Image (cartoon, rainbow over all chains, first blue to last red; front, side, top):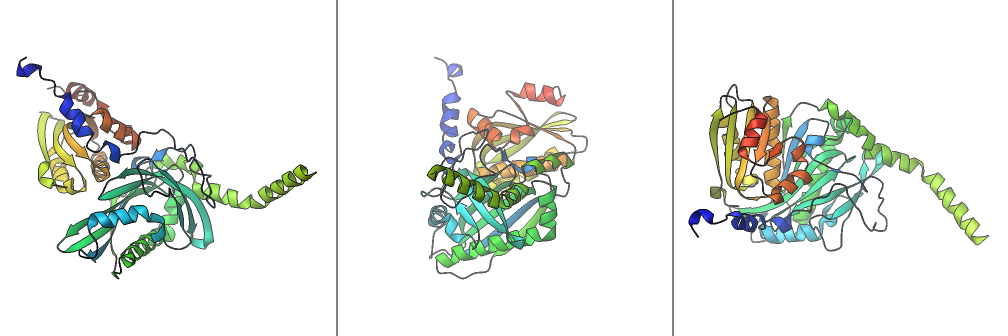
Length: 258
Length: 120
């Protein structure tokens, strides 16, 4: 056999396998599976994932960083803890219903969040990617924004830098308006509190650095129809329908007793 | 991630089309070199950028984020972005992240160049 006949795909397959387990398997629509107690699943089941390409609003890259002494925790240990106890670091009033085993590629988690005006929002995320140094959550249709958040850590000059980086566009015109009317500040507060809590877990108190870059000032008006999936509208309708659902349950129970 | 493992060479295949040959890894650490390559490729009159992934070893979610940013920059310049040389694994990643809706994916360079309206 001459060298010309040697087939290279073996090498290619081997290299591709290097990160194959870190990525979620391809899915066309999300499947929630078992809904944890207390979680509301009204805006995730059957939805498609959305990247910033499918979003409506301006495109933003927001980076939040907190620095810890490297002797306190290594980058890989920090990410292992963050993945394992992800919901514990969220600000109060917001719930992340993930699996008990922590963050795993392909896992779908439900989110119940509190927005300004005590508005409750039910949505979710899928774990797009996870390795020892980072993990990424991607949003479904109807989420506040279309895009993903990457959580990572690296060691630099005697410090372990923990980072949350959001790449996003508001999903629809309503969320775009909401971001302009205080939503951006609220999001900044959310990730600032999260990173502060994460640092506190390692007995460290530190300020969070925030860097916001507008990657694209253009809005994608062709995506205004995303509003159909809006978790804000659907969550509001769900909340308003609560008395009706309670009555229905009561009647059903009475009929069963009779 | 070792940044030195990555290189992005730019080839001029026609007046309006440039190919970026990607070798090594694409991670968040590749931002400077990738955007530098895009800057070299995106000369006046260039209407299509073809990304050649046949030398790609590894890409994480940070790398996908960079590709989205490159795509936005290209769209701003009214340039078409195409890709070829993706393994089945990375084709699936493009589908999963829905990058395939904005980047034309082709089996080989000739197909990509034909779609870009370029001839060698």
